[in-house]
Image 1 (cartoon, rainbow over the protein chains, first blue to last red):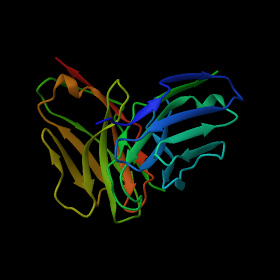
Image 2: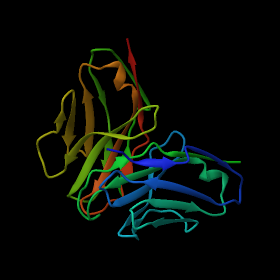
Image 3: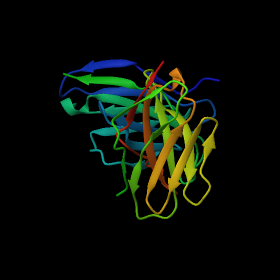
Image 4: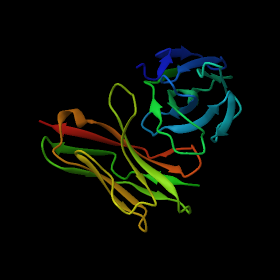
Length: 115
Length: 114
């Protein structure tokens, strides 16, 4: 049973560029959440996708956008990269409607470095 | 807004001994969930234990148990019979009852000495 997978593992970009990160949820899961984990800090919730729609969003600017595909996989896009966007980006998947509790399973993350 | 505080950036424990990691949180809600996650060097967050706020009984999962003090807004994790594989970053997290915006603390790095 494949768990949550993310690609790429590492990524280096320069300021002002755009980046796309990808996530495939655990088999059978239909909800995907994205988190940003800066060095030495806990993860911060970016947004969650369910039924191909953004259902909930954390306190992140609209430079951060996402998409969920019919196969439940998801992309996180960040435009106009800033140095402060350097972080580990975690994807987590779960099954079921977001308003109820469903255990989240995390992927190994994508390490983004902005120079 | 809900906040989670972990006041111990680093902790160490001797193998086979017991260690307690602290966590406090701030909320005005009465229904919520609390979690402890483990993040080893592989970076993948793993759920260690979960507590529903409406349950008075403290959650237990094998060697891991919590001390949940709702009035004090405290949620500590006790690891018994510590093993080398327990070495990792441990994050305390809060989630509202009907909201998936999970709030994490800054983490505690646990070292296990052989």
